[in-house]
Length: 241
Image (tube, rainbow, N blue to C red):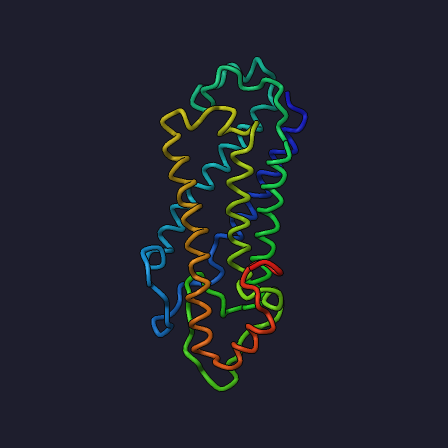
């Protein structure tokens, strides 16, 4: 039995919790009087797409978690388990259950979720999953430039991207359910490919939002936004971009 399987099971559980925090909208959809950007297919159907992506990701987490739990069982017990769990003839060949790729993915997932939560807290009721400009209520309406927004202009997007890429990296690492059980060569492999495609599409769509959001904020706040953009020139990664 791999001695690191218990640690990996806990890491998968923790990462699943972080993914849930990252991908769950902190507020209901914007009201009808809000200006919501719907310039492409992803933006128009973001919430339903998000539900499908979260469902598939949670499925990958659950199966991966139980695969590691199964590896804690005696080999004789593992042999009696149904092949639907793992079609591989050898479910445990002594391969290390935790490796550097898995650890890197886990760290990215946790850090991304923590940064995303920081964005939720900083923006409060101004944070929405959609690209939204709420109607100006009075002259006290301000541009948020504190917290993570003091370092980059779009921290929630890079945080979400780090979380999504971390999830894919850790669950695709050697020794895990998908690689160990050669899932991509089974009928369920199509589901895995769809899941990866949705994760990649989500990350790409979030990066596309940056230009739209900058343009909208500049229109809304004018000179205030220009001064902010000069003070915080980086969009998602300090010192790089």
